Amino acid sequence: MQSFDITIVGGGMVGLALAASLADSHLRVAVIEGQTPDEHLAAMPDTRVSALSRASENLLKNLKAWPGITSRRLSPYQAMEVWEQDSFARLEFKAQDLSQSNLGHIVENRVIQLALLDRVKQLSNVSLFMPNRCSNMVVGESEAWITLDNGDSISSKLVVGADGANSWVRQQQDIPLTHWDYGHNAIVANIRTAESHQGVARQIFTPQGPIALLPLSEPNLCSLVWSTEPNRADMLVGCSDKIFNQTLTSEFDTRLGLCQVEGERSSYPLKMRYARNFVTNRVALVGDAAHTIHPLAGQGVNLGFLDAASLAEEILSLWQQGKDLGLHSHLRSYERWRKAEAAKMIAAMQGFRDLFDGDNPAKKLVRGLGMQFVGHLPGMKEEMMKRALGITGNLPSLVKVKA
Ligand SMILES: Cc1cc2nc3c(=O)[nH]c(=O)nc-3n(C[C@H](O)[C@H](O)[C@H](O)COP(=O)(O)OP(=O)(O)OC[C@H]3O[C@@H](n4cnc5c(N)ncnc54)[C@H](O)[C@@H]3O)c2cc1C
Figure 1: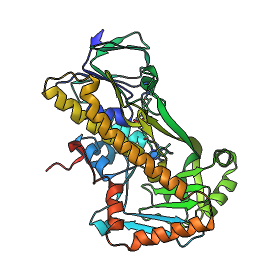
Figure 2: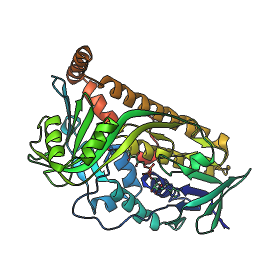
Figure 3: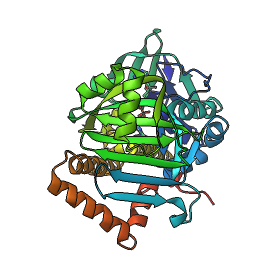
Figure 4: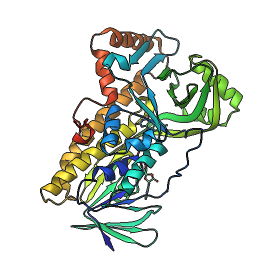
């Protein structure tokens, strides 16, 4: 039996960010991750990428993981264009309007995970169990015990579920889940475009769902996130390259000329999930284990990073006061804080999803006028950009720029 203060189940982006956030403490931390990520990056980027906000960038810099990203691969974007198919509705956001050099970075999820892993491996207070899965979990009055698939046992004051959308920890604790289908699958792929993306992240809203082409490090290569009705997504993943390319080029309004898929296409069902409790006695949830949202605004992992930074802040404060880290009552403020932030994001994503659903002419007019209004009302666009950058609101200190 090995004894720790905190056991993090899931060494994905969010679980590792939490472990790295506990670097400057004497807390003994275990991270259990089921899969060892491949260190080798092929010339063609992975199709799973994230648009990292400024808040996430600040966090990763403060955690000393950012150099591991810049030394691998990342693509800054300087502007965002959003428009609606067959409509006058259009919005453009430029980094220079906020005197910023960019509005964020598109980074492969595996690159983020590898960079955090490099950092976590340097920390003497963190032990990695990888590749290992959990086979059993028992929560007692003052400790929780986890048995691994290799027979090892671990005890700790607090278990954190950072194990993704189908969280094993959440299921072990029978934490109820509010959930609904967005009625979309997201197709992801790499797309070679005839015209250069010029560092602009673009998204078109079509009656069937949004299509985003996110700029990658090569000027004519983009990462596609195409949300559409599940049967159509199956058809688009299974059809020939020729049909796929023709459909995408036309649905994207030939904005970047001819689109050509490179490599594999895959599709993910999109579901809203919101755990009824983010904390129970000796257990806390972070990231996708606690909530999942529609990727249309690219905010899922950004929200998860803020969970990790907020939980670390609470844990460090409890530890400094000599308090029990695992007591539900001690972690209630984390739960209230992050549940409120996740609920706001879920509502916003559902609002967008409903607003842009279908092609009813009256709704379309409202959307067009709304976009014009946002574009012309002084301060409104800047406020939206600040929100997308994640630099407003109740932020944990770990995501603030250090002087
Ligand atoms: C198509 C698509 C596009 C997206 N685009 C964006 C975007 O642009 N920006 C953004 O912010 N977000 C985006 N997201 C959301 C983002 O991908 C997720 O929010 C993010 O991956 C969640 O990270 P996580 O670490 O919480 O979970 P995960 O990435 O799922 O990591 C969980 C980890 O836990 C491990 N694990 C699971 N179970 C166990 C177990 N029992 N034992 C041990 N290990 C276990 C897994 O191996 C994995 O490594 C997108 C999502 C989709 C579907």
